[in-house]
Length: 285
Image 1 (cartoon, helix red, strand yellow):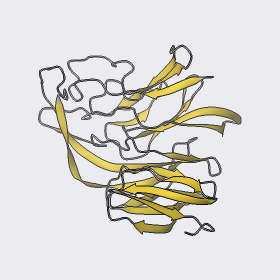
Image 2 (cartoon, rainbow, N blue to C red):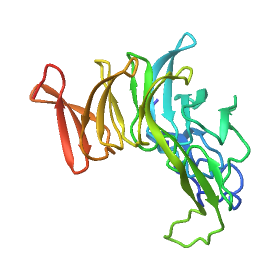
Image 3 (spheres, one colour):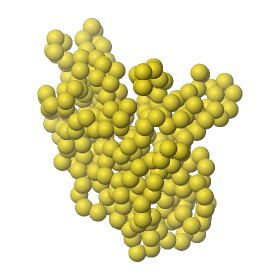
Image 4 (cartoon, helix red, strand yellow):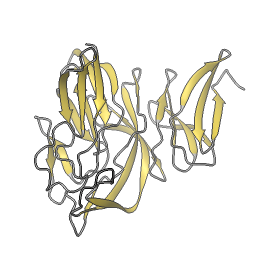
């Protein structure tokens, strides 16, 4: 297909929608571009007329999966707006969309691919409590997909915020938010495993603090992930059981990676100003 898939940012002003009517096309979307010509082949807008700063620059994952008795080429994306999406990556058609966290702004996505919004889901001058918060149900951190388990893994954030909107003069080269979001309560985080065919969460491992660490899954059936409290944890990819944990001493914002060095497989993670390297079973350092 020779396509380039690209996530787009949110419209401005971020939280004040009354000055930019309509869907604000191609914002908060994924676009599929012909890699040779740059021509737009298709697009899917996750959050039409976004007023909560939920851009769509989360990392899409491409895979071939069995769906309805056929092999489908799909694009999977856990979006900042709190919904998980499985799209046909050849044409952008929606296969499945379902919340993977608590969402109070919309409860479902209809057959046309549009979110069915709920009352009270827009920022106001006095403030509206909306879930997820400005940072979103997940963010730029890397998710992972394991073909052996058929599961998509994501660091989820259960957080809400009071969203405010106000008039703001546009000044070139200055922030143009038109409001703000103030987190309501502490919230929590979780590593969640999602079935891309149904959108259902198959298991979760809760985290004390909402996190933006990425995830790594391996052919040996593991999921590695960090958290905001400095823990690097290995989970069983099938059921989420914690198999191993290491406290790094600083919040983890990166994603684990695995490399081969001198014939030995290592898992690497950045934490604070340090890089940690761990040997997998059979490659002890």
